[in-house]
Length: 321
Image (cartoon, rainbow, N blue to C red; front, side, top):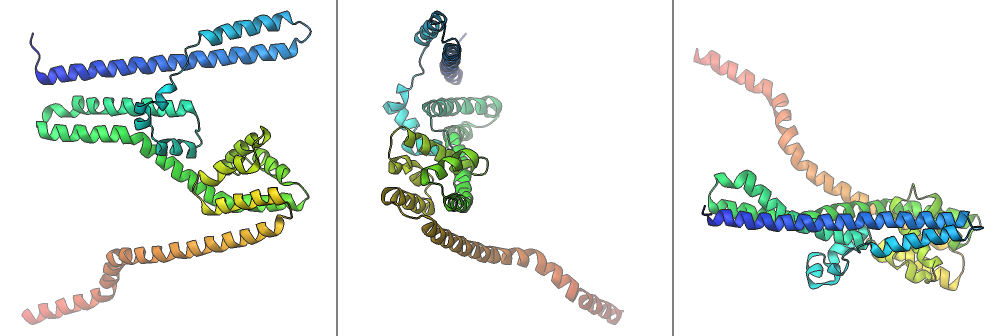
């Protein structure tokens, strides 16, 4: 049986897709083994803490956990540092992943796999469901569009989530400053205030609380306050947040009261937000003009001029008769 060129192309693409599915299955299996090994290690450490009077049992458990960890197939994180990985997961994509609160090598590797699978599977699916009944030029154009959508879709999704988190940061910043002023006013130090805000107010400051928790962990591991807050200052591209972090770093270095600078900064931030709201209201007024002209004006003309037109039509009808 002879195969046409289109059938050979479909067969080769299907084989390539099958290989990608097998690779993804291997990655998932490796991740499951890694998670199971981590649970075994955690359970062995917990048993060792409980059974401190029996050193043999924890040692056996740890040996078993080490054996499982050595037998684990590590995830291919080196793909991310290769030329292929740098092309598929660029620095902009990694920055978007960080802005979504998913700063992890596994997330970057998952993004790479999803992008490759969608870029290959979406054109195949479109061709199988839609391409047999149309001309070759139209099919080629639609397949190219499907490839672009499959390749760029994960990035567009991350961009929407990152934009939502940036907007959330803008909304949380005034509350962040007020809470910091309140904690400083009761006599707590800057470190204590940041620790309490990250732990007790995380349900209110969902984005800033998460970023502040990461900064506190880095600070407790020996980094300076400036280095630990660098991610918070630069990640979400908020100039007000950058200025606040600079203020906190200066207070941490040189000391002094922070309540008065925070009050001034809070007043300036509220004034800036008030001016932004006025600007938005002005833009909404301009946009509503077109809506009013297209919807309200015809109804207003009908209500006001309708009786006059009816009277004119009746008078013209009587004159004709």
